[in-house]
Amino acid sequence: MLPQQPDLFFRTWQAGDGTYLLNLNADPRVLRWTGDLPFKDVAEAEAFVQSYDHFNVHGFGRWLVFRRSDGECLGWCGLRRGSHGIDFGLRWYHRHWNQGYGAKAGKAVLKWADAQQVGTLYAQHHPMNHYSGRLLLSLGFTLYAAYSGSEPGWFTYQRRPSS
Image (cartoon, rainbow, N blue to C red; front, side):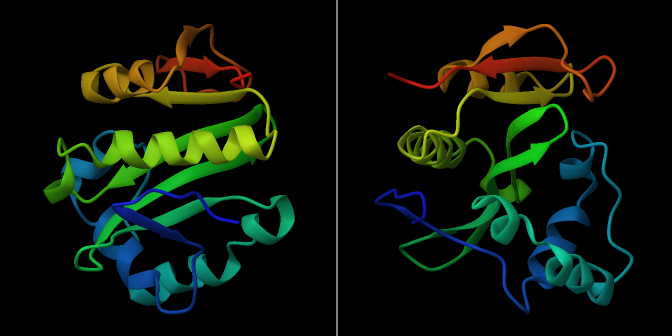
């Protein structure tokens, strides 16, 4: 089962998706807020896709998100299990920022997480990325003390499951 949203569709990563990740992480406007590095080439990004086993191991991951109207990839949104707990995150191509896709995708992923009884979720954002902070608050996250494994100086949020 995947998150559901009328305007968007979600899918797990598959062979050939390295191009999406390469292009997403090639934009310095995107990486400014992530702490990640760009992939050196499509082969490195594709190797990352092929080694990404989060869906098989945990039953969830960072889904690619596409607009239903034209099939364009917007970026990714989803969950990641780490030593600190389960992290919610999303990353869009810059051309899709501030168009409401983050809220739509986030609501769908959180509804899915509640239905699967995933439990408490955490999220973080760079302290200067005010848009992410507002998005997380609108999705029901609350500001929280940093958890183990958090990025120093980043804002940390928590969301308990909806009842």
